[in-house]
Image (cartoon, rainbow, N blue to C red; front, top):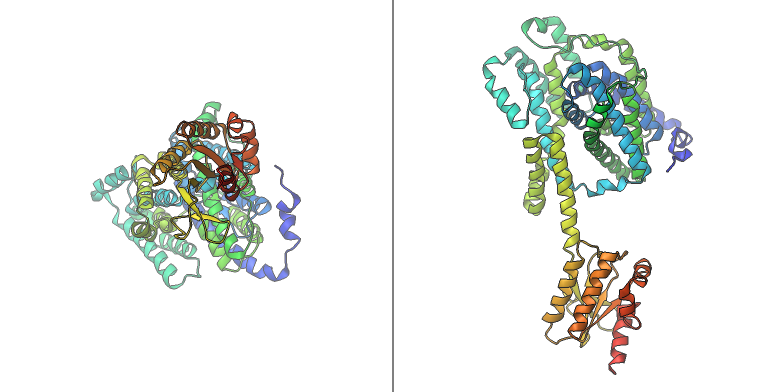
Length: 558
């Protein structure tokens, strides 16, 4: 798969209108006010120095603007990508100096995985990540991030381990909490909540960050035991190859798959939502390549894994942004900030960063969605809770694996339990309908017409065979023939054909004929190469149910 010219910047630049410039510039300023504080905070989560966030942020913005298909998606450091990056890297090494190289290498691997998957046209895989599973996983991830950041607000370390171990560690250190740090953190949390509630159009994160810098500098909070960010070197993006041993690349590979899945799922769900709102069309494979390219690029600029940001994308759209020019403008502002303004972050209290992160991930705590599941869909509730508890107990990457396995099990269970409907002819027509839905549908004497309400595949073929045999034996008047309508099946694999052959033999043994109706072109070609075709031909394969019933009625002299 290759990217067509319209996939590049010229595709949207050619149709760019001057009237869009004001809204895009406002959107760029809005994105900048969010990227600056959040990137510093997410670098802390990812376990890399703050300047590394400034290396990667403008690169991710530019690369997605050039390749991505969404007019509204803003790509950069996010809480989900940062915490998954940290979890993967810590499994290889906990040396802070080594973690920097591992984080950049992980971003390269994530990018390579997504680009390869996009070229192979695997963008559809996100359709198999069930929404309840994502709700539970992201809820658990948000709680995990919050308990990690709580240590910054309390002025103590949250230690290592899962959510409950970290929470126990924090509580066990109650006598060591720094109340000055607590006051700073609580004030930052309150400020963010108040600004979001009463002045939602203002950049709450940037305002609280600036206030934290001013208060810290004027009151010398570091002298009162408040941990600060410290010196942040100037950060201009310069290409740099990740220099890690070959063995570490292999150790990162498994985690890269998980980070890639979440990064793309998060990005695509955001861009798809905006596409629906604005009537745009998206190509999942192209989006996979675009997000992968952004990760690959930031990895070669000493940064960590990135994804689509819901908060920044929504803020840019709300400010009037309508094109990738938003990302390009924000990238210029971030480069200027990294080159000339990083020294301003030196006195920034860590508690303020912790508060910014906690508020940023609060949106993942979708309590209302869990309540909706509890009221309307109990199975989805249990699935979401299983994913949530899995993340809290076994940590993020194993929890992600559990979420993926749950999604696959849900899909297999759903696909394997399709219903077999009994059909009857609707009065005055040649239409055959489900007798449970159409009470006036009339069955034909001596002929049982059945329809699997779903695609036949190896996982449900045996169930269908058992259901057909049971229905044939349970009817009041024993039929002489069974007609199976295959209108919902678009492919007949060898295992399915073998099962149908077994069904035909079982029915023949009981004196019943198996007939197939509405076999589509592709399944018909597969059937023609299978021994079952010789068993059913001539006369037992029909274009429609009506043709099958007429043929059977004519053969019996009705």
